[in-house]
Length: 250
Ligand code: GLN
Image 1 (cartoon, rainbow, N blue to C red):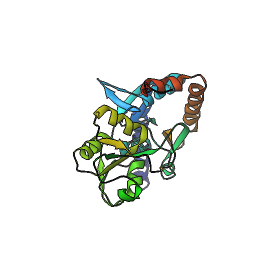
Image 2: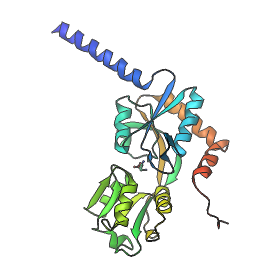
Image 3: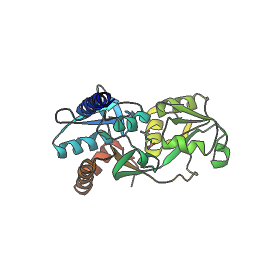
Image 4: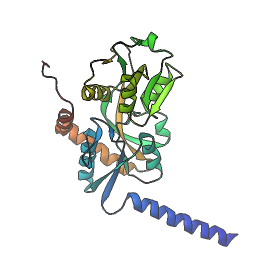
């Protein structure tokens, strides 16, 4: 019995070393994200780029580590942190009380809200007409939770773009997704029939970097980087690079 226990703890210790080794391998900082969320993260050629990739590069630079990006489903990011597969989750992730049960968050770096995309010729025009309709979302996101408040028919997709394509094709009545991404997708599809409703008040949401629990030094270091890039203008420059300023903006 005793022997069995000892062997068990040895195996557990070996497994722990292995999993920690995977995430903390040689001078790298591994970021998990879902690169289907432009302009925060998207694939360009072979690379994952976007606002979050650049913020993570600043975090890695300050830590003296090389940034490695792992592309995964959005709802895999928190489990990957918990299992030690990745070091940081940077995925336009909103700080939510439920998520704080599993991971810690850095200070916040962006204020977003949800937005509701509909077809101009569709039946949804406001909060009232949204109720009970077929709403598309990205699985496990705050848009998913918001949609549940309006309808029992919530269709979940791996990427918001697929939901918007279904909306454009008439299979859905609305899509709820983070506002900056909603605008980005509408612009990219260049479809005049897709519009954002401006009469639904969604709550403020704040994005932060997620870290496995019990790593206060890492959170501290990330916070220092967020403070630095906020103060020295780097964050504004990153945002300007990825958010086109309208030609007619005054
Ligand atoms: N901000 C949303 C959330 O945290 C969506 C994030 C995403 O899909 N990458 O749930």
